[in-house]
Length: 502
Image 1 (tube, one colour):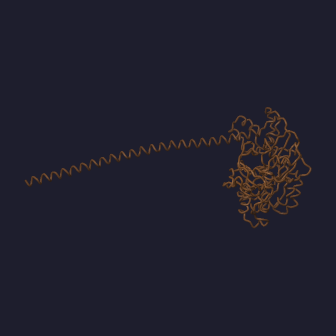
Image 2 (cartoon, one colour; image 1 turned 30 degrees about the vertical axis):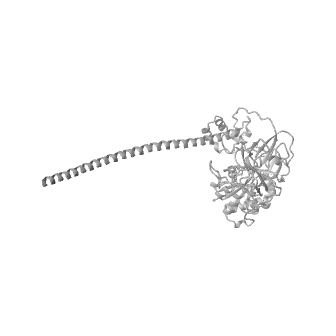
Image 3 (tube, helix red, strand yellow; image 1 turned 90 degrees about the horizontal axis):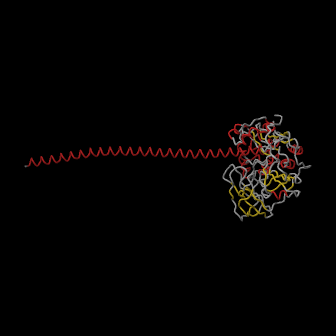
């Protein structure tokens, strides 16, 4: 074991602490809006129509892509629309969604699962349950859980990420405090699926209530609880593996390559719900916090509007800014009419403040010191600003996890991470453009090759025809000469016969 920490990062106290971490059960929404485009994979195709009545937990959209998960109705009611609506995404663009109006009954569809006797279920059956239940990484990544589990064929260590390193976010803390039995049972399910020899539940040392709650229900010798120093960004997968196991995941590599599987603690609880309680993912715990309200955690149905969720707590009357996710890596949203998605772990509601003016870089090197990946943000900044993507790649741009530690400590208030995000997007565009250029060049070269080949084949064919014609004409001439000889001989014989008879 290592010393359970990593170099770099920043220590940020929770700016909006609460005395007791509770979970409020949000009332059933009157309407939900469920996006068809999830964080990863292709857009799902609706398998219901406007006017259809659906039940809670019913699959309403799916895709043929095995990488993706289906979308379930989070309430029972009537499908009122299948159209484009604004979703919580940094682009601010609209996406195809299914709207359902509640009938107030919350009638569930009959579902399948292994039940408490899951040890008699085979690995693939349980992975299929996880996929059909629509479970993804609920910490914010949104990566399909069944895909991770399918790749974990040589897994020796399972890591359950309960660090929740983003300041202000409390949903995982609340989950571990109030549902410790389900979390531990979910870990045992994952141990059975992966065949891992051991599991580590990682918790930051400022979550003592959650740690003690899990200790009370953790009686499996293969499961251990490890506390880490409260430091941002301890929850990043590669950093967590390094801190716990002292295993380096190389650039471009994956944890599965090293026999390690990481799962968010909320995803682990969702897997318990799917396998034991036979319930698909239709709700999640969301933290509502910020300096404009009293922070709370609420369990809400997916598709509920931000407005309704924010309305569960007391909000002041000032003008507000809204942000989904963490204060460091989250996404700013312009309206509260967007829906809660699977990756919505937190909503920040802050009083509007003037934006701090950006100054010139003073080369203080603070950004280089705090980078948890060990990059050189200052050099990356200059090259990204100059759109020199090749140089950015030389400084390992793609290894940047966009944690914003560099932006946080910058005394010049430069939004460094936005430059890196822009450079990544530009690199991807250049790669796409280059791919299109390569395809166009290959098509042109193949066309030129085809035309030249056709030209050569036609020339060869014409030469062969010409030669065949010459040979035919020669044969015809020879045959004609032979025929004339025969006629001459025949005429000579006739003449001789006449002379003999005269």
